[in-house]
Length: 286
Image (cartoon, rainbow, N blue to C red; front, top):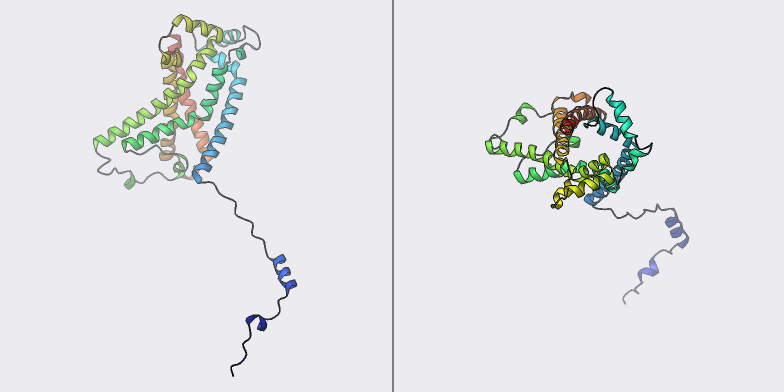
């Protein structure tokens, strides 16, 4: 006769519910992994957060420093002549009272300041990368690239394609156009507000009425656009072309750091600003 069959459950050892519960209670709980954002979205949010903060900071600081800006504007104008130009400028600045420098600030200035400090720094990079891609040339060095050692002699030796006159012409064209476009964009945003702060909202409105601009573009750019744009073009060349190239190639490698780059850039910007403001002041006096 066949042996009687036994089910698995009959031969299995009895289940200890207390032991199972104790094991579950002492087992480490692995928290669920939170959903992560795509790197591109995370970087965009971070850039936007920083831009808003920097833009707000720029608006506050520029508003606080309005007396200094008005003094500088008067010193660079033909309204100040002869001896003691600083005293004359201070007198003109506060001719309408202690709060006179702040009364010339309108909504256009607040918007222009915010744009200048929040997004204008990205304008050059946008044009530089767009032109580099369109023309098939390399963009300017940025960020961590500046901390790396300069290219060796072998790396600096141009390839046959890079030695081609057409390639060199495209590279030169990109280097010229990027700061021109970025500087002109910044002047389009800021120049109208600068002229308004110089004359004051009421007088500036009267000037616009007398000029009777028929073109919306002329009204947007406002008077003295060319000298303002030239100032910004010089500053773009100093900040985004001369500074990174000279720092990358000639600054001692062992001394490269974020701190040294900051102070090196500050020095270069001071020199570039002196040239830019001088040409604008000469135009104003002319």
